[in-house]
Length: 320
Image 1 (spheres, rainbow, N blue to C red):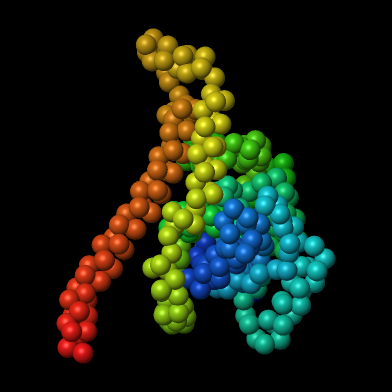
Image 2 (image 1 turned 60 degrees about the vertical axis):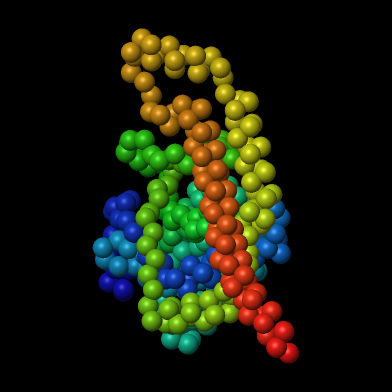
């Protein structure tokens, strides 16, 4: 560890870091923290922020082993670490060293409630500051609302490029669903950072902790309904799709049809504004279908159990 911190290979290669591995317990702690804001009500969630502990390897991998929240009060659209958060950060780091914790602070995480995993202009400036003074440092973004809607953790890991650096053209990137009021902020800064793939790992301690958590919360997990919890978010997504449809220029659509008739080179499918709205609508519909499927399976399972226990209960009552 000390050798790689002294060599600092990330100074010479802007793409030195290529992978992020996060422990299952650290992921659970981050998701629970992002989910806890706004008293857990999806429509009232605010952004939260925390730090991650871990290490880096010579092959360019971040290994995140733990995470802890920062005492930061954010809004629905932004969060910044103030003086109290920085003081808490320093105290926590000193206490970790005092008790012999070998991991360093290797990054920060924050939430984007309902508008996806990417870096805004403020996030880019924050990450650039961290990378300038506290390297190696990683930025992680979690969307707690889309996590609840999709049934899987919506997470992204990012590193920013140095100021003035122009990244090479890597070809078209995968389309990402962004709310209409955030598209401009996303488009202005999307070339100032790159995304790293994420892997989740689990050791024996993680397995024991996760088993204890499941034993405590399995009833809540089975009894919860994503369709009910995500009503507000779903309504916003439907409204966002309608607004995107209203802003589509009919002349642009006509030109694309004319291009097809004249056999001219056409753009990527994702560049068509109608295709983008279709992708958003398809994703939203699949999440609704998944929620309905879960409800049907639970209803069939517990209804059949109730029916099976019905005659036995009646017989017992008659015997009494």
